[in-house]
Image (cartoon, rainbow, N blue to C red; front, side, top):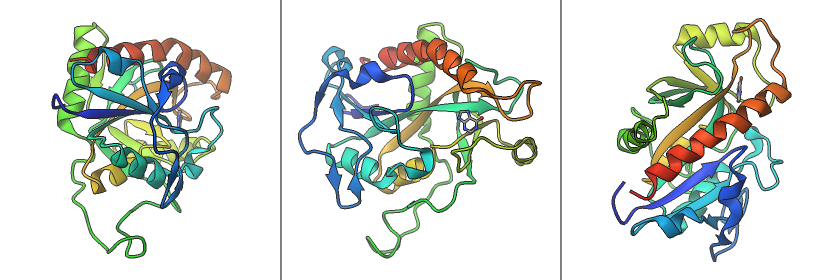
Amino acid sequence: MAKQAVVAIIGGTGLNEFAAGSQVPGGRSTPYGETSSAIICTPLSAQGVGLSCLFLARHGNPHAIAPHQVNYRANIWALKQQGVTDIIAVNAVGGINPAMTAACLVLPDQLIDYSYGREQSFFDGVANPLQHIDFTHPFSAQLSGQLQKAASAVNIPIHSGGVYGVTQGPRLETAAEIRRMAQDGCDIVGMTAMPEAALARELEINYASLCLVVNPAAGCSEQLITMDDIHEVIDQGMGQVRAVLSQALPA
Ligand code: HPA
């Protein structure tokens, strides 16, 4: 990211201490409705050199908004109004690729969108004139590369590349759905990268996703998936996510 970059982290579960800073002026209201949470100027910005870092809690604070009900348009639009140039999205995901086991970090470079019924464009011919953005490479290679370098600098293994399959939720998938996604080439499965990534591209914001695998996807292990197991991995794994972010941001 450039020196004058304004970076925002969109966090899911387990990054609450980033929400500890002061709220940026401007409030939560947008032409598309309210953002999921207030936008916070994080303590990390104080360490940055010419860099400010904002934080938005995707599922609200406290965490109560389901993935299909997140107001993705309001969130991305409000960040753009704050001058954000780069978004690092933190996503909890299930692992489909056997190499992507619980507690692994992944920087996907592709996605397949299986979600439906979400407001997914600023340029839909209603809110704004119709436009078709290029989305060949949905994630910023440059921003993902910086996260990868940050992870190596702090000796945290990370998978670079992979296909993120975005499902509707809030339920988890069936084993047959995951088998189909594996055949489609998906490595990980989550519920929140879309339409977030496409909306960021529409507003010309660089966007990378830093994923924490929190469970083997449905049917990929002998066990059923429990929220207790997921929360245990989130508690362990978010420390690694924070270490990568802290290393990536002040540079
Ligand atoms: N599927 C979809 N979303 C998820 C999962 C999963 O297994 N784990 C965390 N988010």
